[in-house]
Amino acid sequence: MIKPVVAANWKMYKTIEESVSFVEKLKKKPLDWDEVHIILCAPYTSLFEMGNSLRGDSFVSLGAQNLYWEQEGAFTGEISVGMLKACGVEWVIVGHSERRTIFNETNNEVSIKATNSLKNNIHPIICVGETLQQKKNNQTKEILSKQIRESINDDSNNNNTIIAYEPIWAIGSGLTPSFNEIDEIHNFIKNEIRGYENYKILYGGSVKSANSKEILNLDSVDGLLIGRASLNVTEFNKILSF
Ligand code: 13P
Image (cartoon, rainbow, N blue to C red; front, side):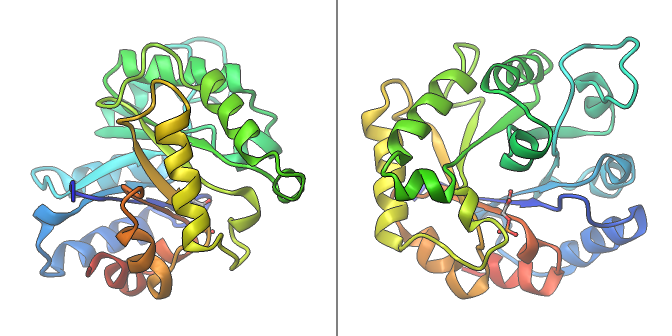
């Protein structure tokens, strides 16, 4: 198996102190780091100090949860890719369903954000996923296909971009698709949407130590994108001990 990616999305949790403390504890755990690629996607405010704490340590990559596509200018409240880069950020989540639904982000905006991150050598993790209603209407594949075609453009390839499949109804709900369903959807993305065969695809949505190993064992799953269960370093370490 290729080295799996285990990415944490801390969302709007953790102060600077809490973030750095997590990193320090994580660094103490004796793991065979060569077997996993860890990406910690932290709030903007924690990135600089986490970058300092991680400097010289190659086992964990630093990630952000969003960016704006302009380099600089009068865009109150926004953060540019250059600013992320200066903190040591190497990855950025783009198009998370919370950004798509709460902040009305469109596929086109996701695509522009991904392009701009790539121009600055920051790798996008582009998120896609269906709502419960879409699942019930048997529209999952159609929705994913549209999201992928419109959110991922020609600047992306399987070396510089990762896809995260996160069914919206599974996020934070304690519910997950069956292992067969996860496998079917990941295979659908790899085999039926042309051009995405070799992309790494992470699964996200209610992953915890009790289900992470079985999900990671699926051949079509290249890693995990974890919300709540990534906030606690003991639980996160359990997920990493495969
Ligand atoms: P949970 O793991 O809390 O369900 O969140 C998943 C997620 O949104 C990761 O991006």
